[in-house]
Length: 201
Image 1 (cartoon, rainbow, N blue to C red):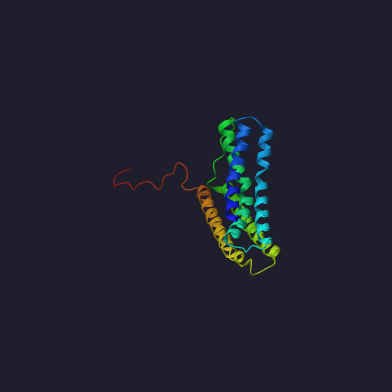
Image 2 (cartoon, one colour):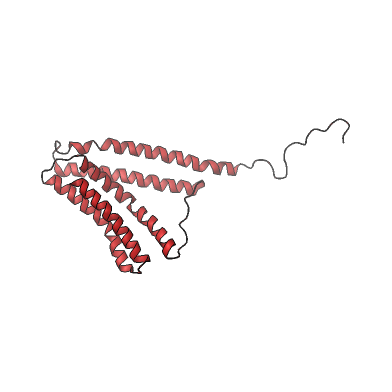
């Protein structure tokens, strides 16, 4: 039941997103577009209510409930960025907006980009953990919610890997800027003159 609800919410997410952007940029119906896009976060609330209702009515938590908690956390964390990403491309393709800026590859702009990505990942893990803990507290039965506890270690592993990737990408982004700051050889000077043969000036 919960897995089915997750699949339905995922399909509806893309239907509402593409429908909202299509209504704005293809049909010029801005109010309808706003309404459809505002319904996207409602899907998360509906899924949370489905999971809580199933457990509250005596159901035993299984992997589907844990996946639902993770889906909720990461959807909330990444939902806005996905909408912004799609909106920028729709605006460029159908409304003559400038092309979306390319991802910065080096320097402080790249570090800021990686920091934002790291924060989204950590927010997703934190929200997922909060949903899991909230469901455990809501049910109040350790035996029926034991399956949910098995999802905390993977979240901790994800947070650790996310941090390692962040540090690695920041180091790679700053390396080119350090090379750019190295003055290297002086302009117009290519090293010592070649040795002259005896008898030459």
